[in-house]
Length: 144
Image 1: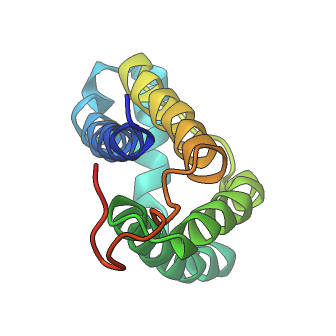
Image 2: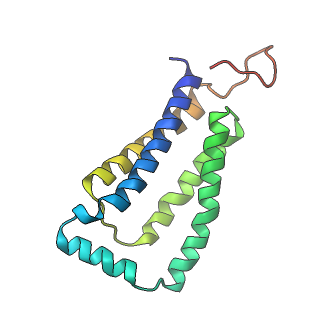
């Protein structure tokens, strides 16, 4: 398989896994055991702390950067691999500040697949030559 096609497939699959994980987080809360569902309801009902509000404001530009990097990689822009990697490096330690989480197994599976696909995207973007311009070819036109 051509590296550019593999990169695009991995990007689409990752994006779909993220969307499915988010959808599962909302739809499968009722399928959790009663004690976990009760804890989630209590967490949703309480007012956010100042730290949580600040963290929310930090995640907005990260989300925008993630989407920009995804589109840039899909359009085979070499700069996008660095944005994507930077977002990944920043999100990992920030996720430690979120505190405890409760997930249904299906949500955790979709989340794990998205994380794995993110690693595949980084690998293809940096080590396959998928984002390199073909020699002598037109500047804006790249084959799959």
